[in-house]
Image (cartoon, rainbow, N blue to C red; front, side, top):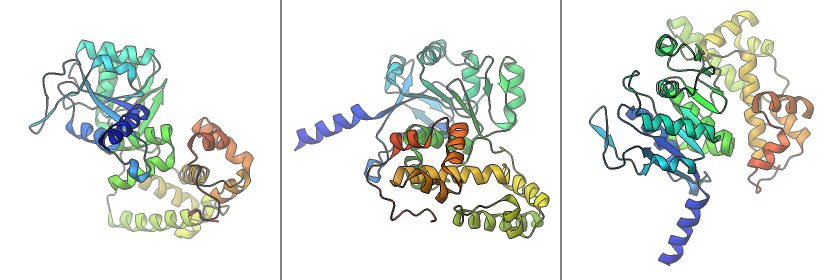
Length: 344
């Protein structure tokens, strides 16, 4: 029995999606924890993919100190990076911390091989040191945008987003945005249901788009009342996605003029009502394509796109794929159209 278990574990490891956490002195413990929570926990019993997370460093013999008395013991050398499907760089406690030259060289080689590379928060500074962000768009914590621009003027720093991608290099804003990017990378590689499974386990929101603003103010009791009304509108919209909702419809439900509703909605969520509605329709369509064998026109109707042509256009522009290709890549293969939780 033990031999059978060992063989099964070996097969799981062989099929696992390989993730490299690049470690060196100065990395943030929070970001290390986020990366470990997303890719370092075995949730295959709940239908999540199998992951093989490795902590990769130039020196595997010495624990890497982190703030708060914590330490990280690497388990693989930089020579393991060619095996990785994804390379993730944590943020830094001191954003001017120079990464070791072997780490920068290894990151450059990984990118030249076509490996997806992601950096959380101040990890963008590490990628910039490696020259990987030269002439490319990148984001970091809103409080570090000016510093990144000053230290690395060759980087096209985006002032306000949660995460962005340029040439297979992903960067994220601070703290919670790192969670958003990690879940997005799971969604991109394994589908919306896999990301939702991990998000539920972490008790966090499964879907925030990278285009949302980083910094949102909630300064007054009036704003709190508006936020309650907007939350009710979002809940109403999610229950009625299959209907031809418009921004004017949502404004009426909130008891506001369309202009006032759009202004309050953007201030509260960091995105426009129209973009939010489209994001929710895309998420609903992704789940239907993964969970059911419904015909494409029915998927489009239930997700509120109205027609398969419209759905296909939005998949192409936002996800760089087609609904049929998405289903082929991420369908569970066991779902049917009869018991979908998505509104009919």
